[in-house]
Image (tube, rainbow, N blue to C red; front, side):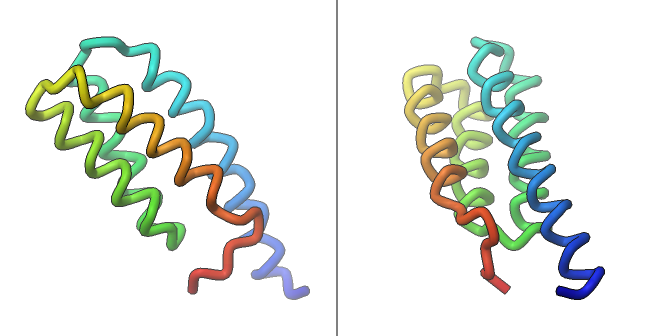
Length: 95
């Protein structure tokens, strides 16, 4: 495996770890719509940067719910974000 491929795998592993922590933090924010929006905006962008469109789409849905301040939908959407996160293979080849 090339050094570039090894570096990419290492970055993806760190991304997965950080996303799991961010999802936990996100669930703890309650009704802080500004913080929720900022956090999922970052997740949405990072999902796209790492080539995980399913993460980006789920984060977009959470972001939209935070903008509209829809607390009833938020927990379900965060759950969907986590389902999509765990559906990403450890060594995703979505490129």
